Length: 323
Ligand SMILES: NC(=O)C1=CN([C@@H]2O[C@H](COP(=O)(O)OP(=O)(O)OC[C@H]3O[C@@H](n4cnc5c(N)ncnc54)[C@H](O)[C@@H]3O)[C@@H](O)[C@H]2O)C=CC1
Ligand SMILES: O=C(CO)COP(=O)(O)O
Image 1 (tube, rainbow, N blue to C red):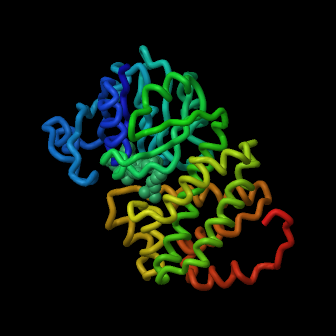
Image 2 (image 1 turned 90 degrees about the vertical axis):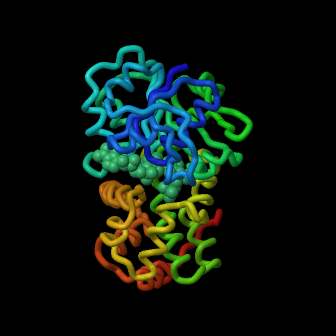
């Protein structure tokens, strides 16, 4: 099968390598010419622990679309719309697969909805605990795919180190993947305080609850949040040394400003954008999202994270039979 990948960041490249390992033909679109050159001259990918690219790349997005049976999206969510807008025809593409995790701030849309603004093709989302650095090193990983063509895609993607489960809950997989990035920023803040283990366990538990509550707005199935794209990805992102969202939180707790952090990294921490959409949607729907709200205030209103912690602890006590 021919797969085109839009995005030569860490996940796009790691996933492209996986596809080549699984005997597929792969062409990757990279925004920057230097990256295209690096990949095509088979230089090691510096942001993937020096892994060799097994695929070819181009700077021409239409060339990738024209090449593809399936088109994979792996770019930061805020840039998906501007890049899909460059595509002038969909030729033989029989489905779109999204690897990106987040919500579009401008429109408050999920990636499935952004894609639908451009093309009516079967859409599949792939999500779960899958740090690119580990997939590139063939460390066993399991993920969920939801949407169209899942039984075919499950076989195309799975191998001895990458196991794919199927689901029918596109909204649940998209929302859990987007929200866990916001929660990982909060977890990173606790790490930055010096490793508050009790607080972090409580945070992750309540984060899952908050994610489920948010998912209900989109008719997501609660059970999805207990699967790989929910609690699985929440655990890895809140705890992994590889997580950019967790690290962003850690830097904030250590006193760096958001603009200093953004300037010093080429990588995306989607949670810092998604939180804006989450707070906006929650307010429109009159839904209480206490952790997301505090992350927003810390990042964008300069709130002291220790005051946020106190404010969360001092909220009115709750009686909930299932907690
Ligand atoms: N890195 C990982 O382990 C995983 C990442 N993801 C998701 O995959 C998506 C892509 O992330 P990564 O591959 O990690 O990227 P990255 O963080 O490694 O790099 C960011 C990429 O965005 C590109 N970019 C910046 N401005 C752009 C623009 N205007 N148009 C197109 N591209 C632009 C940069 O060239 C760079 O390749 C994100 O939504 C992320 O949450 C999902 C699972 C795992
Ligand atoms: O989604 C991811 C792992 O499943 C990557 O998380 P980060 O973007 O926080 O590194």
